[in-house]
Image (cartoon, rainbow, N blue to C red; front, side, top):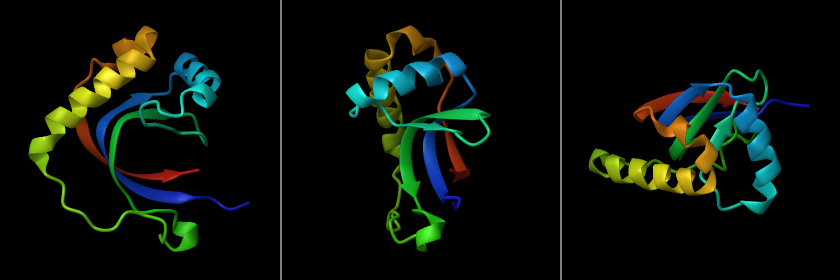
Length: 113
């Protein structure tokens, strides 16, 4: 078994692991394929990232061939993306809407799964 490695740029919030939300999401996911994008640290259970994935290199195991091509990001669109994401999240997960209280930031991270 190999490890998938993705480098990503995300406009969102990175939170400590939240087991209750992770369990709820796992139960709801099959019914909510159109839910907001969420990244779980499935290997170590240290964090959850909520937000808009702006760029993903693709999996390093496949030579990054499945990733996004280079694209410029217009910073003036970020507030609208944030509001749309928060609205969508709150509609899908109203009992966890308090997770959206933190301000979004730009996150560049390597994610292993």
